[in-house]
Length: 386
Ligand SMILES: [Zn+2]
Image 1 (cartoon, protein in one colour):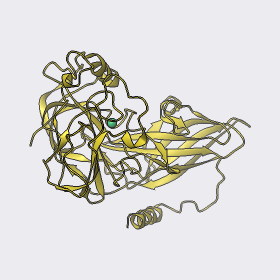
Image 2 (cartoon, rainbow, N blue to C red):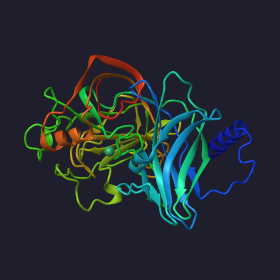
Image 3 (cartoon, rainbow, N blue to C red):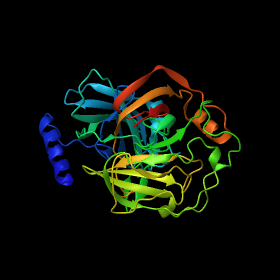
Image 4 (tube, rainbow, N blue to C red):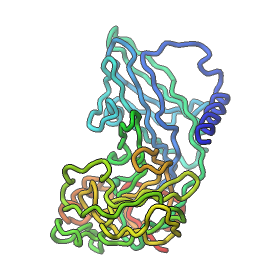
């Protein structure tokens, strides 16, 4: 059904576009959107398109990317323009993190990790396209073409209850410009997957804004350690694990296999084609097994430090299939939360607080904002209540 729906969405988008591709025009590259963008409703009141564009060099010359513009279709209005400097931070050769560049050698491809924050006053685009401007190094000519048209996904919001209860929870590596989850593009089973696109690593600040107090090797010194992890919706447990030992915090463990990366975990089928992953829970705390029916608010386990993790946290994401790695990551919102602060000092500040016990550099939201049906953006500090 999903494949059919996708085909229909494409046909509708193509029908809406004015006489596209009527004439064949040679291009020195091919470009395609890996997954049609699915808007996220952020805690900043804006809608965010977070998606990936693959561009491959089909010529015998090097290509230098100069500009990529994201256009509303069919109006052609520019929603975002990325210059060479922007592209140098977002275009990854082979899709590999750390391999960012603006030049594509002969036979190379790259993946452009895109984030378009939309003005709340405007309607959501029904489709978008990409005007790619580049230079062929040999013979030294500039080229521009509008390609890679895609519909914007119009899918019902995935609305979640609280995964944790209490104050000071901080959304680590969240949407939309942090890179550890958003760019976790993996080559698995012969194709790309990106299940963690909208994942959050939840940690918790204490009354002194510390994620950990005292010895950073002691699990119980972390504010979030041992908190109850709750079912965010009624659902059915698809799979779970409960037997992996705690890791020593402070560094990622060595020799973790792919079946151990999530540590002790639960995958919950919450209906509508949406699945929730909870990862890294305490050994012995995961009380639900495959087939179990759970109600929103039921305790599924306790926050721990199992699997591929360097500090106690709850990794949570929503995806369109039951496999934590092979699915596509989709956005979600929490029915209600109170936004109390934001760490505007960024991921480096968060990492330092986690590694050393220094207080987070938080900017309070004053007065706190009670928000409904939003995705907390990167490094938001929130309070969840029942
Ligand atoms: Zn994570």
